[in-house]
Image (cartoon, rainbow, N blue to C red; front, side, top):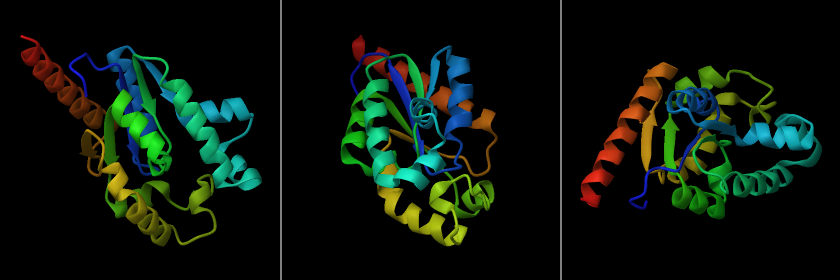
Length: 182
């Protein structure tokens, strides 16, 4: 990260970890624009993510996701919520690390399974053993999520508590930058 003030903040993490809810609240507190990459894709495509997965497949969705992320990152002053699998593309992860304060949200498997439930709206959990699938995907993605600049475990925290932790970390980073600039 450069010494300049934080331009964009991006949230990554597994589905149901709280990226959208935390992002919305964080953006409000910081008086920034909130951007949900999945919502932008849905708007552009005129259909839900689950419909895109069902009709076109995951590879097609990941192509849309990559394009939308590149578009979003041309702007600054945003809080960005990403899809859970966005970090599996090396280019996406590099873009996020270079152009945002990348915050990884985590939670225990039990919490994720509880939050995601038997929610058929989540295409990667449809028609499978939810716990087994969550564990499998987490294992594949864990090292990528760990590349975030900051990581916060949301397991026992309310949305507001997660937002407060992020605000404290941003304040601390800004103070560190100010010291470096003296």
